[in-house]
Length: 229
Image (cartoon, rainbow, N blue to C red; front, side, top):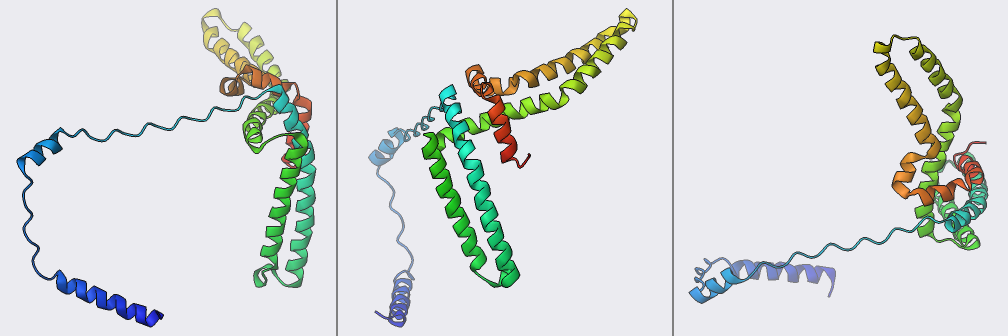
C-alpha cells in the first residue's frame, strides 16, 4: 500500500469511528451486590520488594597492587593518544577549519576508539576488571589527596600550633580554655589528614592500609593523572 493510500484508509477509518460514536453512550449498568462485596474483600496487590544491593567489592592489597600496574600502563597510553589526536585536530583546523568539516568528528571517534582499546589492553595486562577499577580508584583518590594535603600543610600547621601553645601558656588560667580548644581542633584536623580518617570511615582500615602500602607509587601516578610533574 502506498503512503497516499494508507493515509486515505486512515482518514476513512477515523471518519467511520467518529460516526459510530456520535450517538450517546448507553448508561452504565450497576455492578451486582455480589460483585461489589467481592471487590471490597479483595486485598490490594502487594508492593514489589526492593531489589537487593549488589555487594561492594572489597579493596584488598592484591587489587591495589594490580591497580598500580594498570595505572602504570594506562596513563602513558592515554597521553600518547591525546598527543596524536591533538596533532590531528590542529592539522584539520589549520587546513579546513573544524566547523567546516566532518573530519574533526571522525578524528574524535577514532581517539575514543583508541582510548577504549588502550584501556582494555591495560586492564588485561594487570588482570583487573572495570568493576575493580571503579571500586579501588575512588578510595585511592581520597587517601592520596588527604596525604598530599597533609604533606603540604604539615610544616606550617605544626609551627602554628607550636606558636599557639606558647601563647596559651602565657595566658591566665581562666582564659586558656577557649585557646586550648582551638589548638586541640587544629591538631586533630592535621592528624585526621595524616591518617586519612574520612577514607577509613568510608572504606575501612584494611582498605586504607592496603593503599598506604603503595603510597609512593600511587602518589606519583596520581600526580601524572592530574597532569602534574
